[in-house]
Length: 197
Image 1 (cartoon, rainbow, N blue to C red):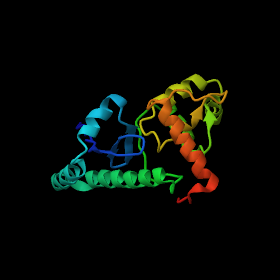
Image 2: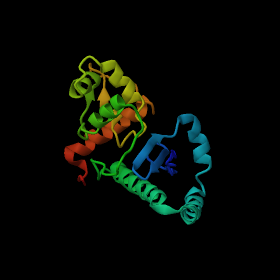
Image 3: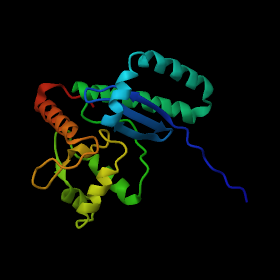
Image 4: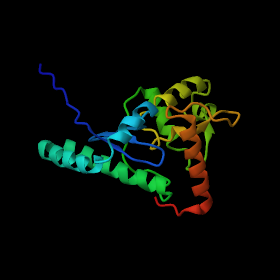
């Protein structure tokens, strides 16, 4: 018998945002990564961003010429869609993301991440409520661990999960960013900016 292995063509880039650089990566099925660049990497990224846009465009053009097939082109399209939707999100004109996501994780993690996508813009929930929603009411701690492993933050809004007592709890990109994201969403959901779906 012959074993066939499908090679995943990953397209990635780093984009600027009001809360710091965001790394995006996609395969043909969808976005597999959307994470803030860590604070330790911020200084390096900022140092290299002077001519980054021009360099990225040249690299994108070269990469497109090298890549063959629909899979790599689809990944590039997904990256561009994510970049545009994130810009709209930070501008306050987008409350729901449409870019396809394809995070890798266990069945349990994927069920948690799917439940996170149902948390409305400007709203919050807690780990126990998510556990109940996925029919595992005693799994609040496991939900927290899955939340922490979310590779597509913002798009899969793990920042909308808070402590049962209303306190801000762990966020891989820092509690300061979590607080800013929640405040931005709550302000925008009160009608400060028009919503675009």
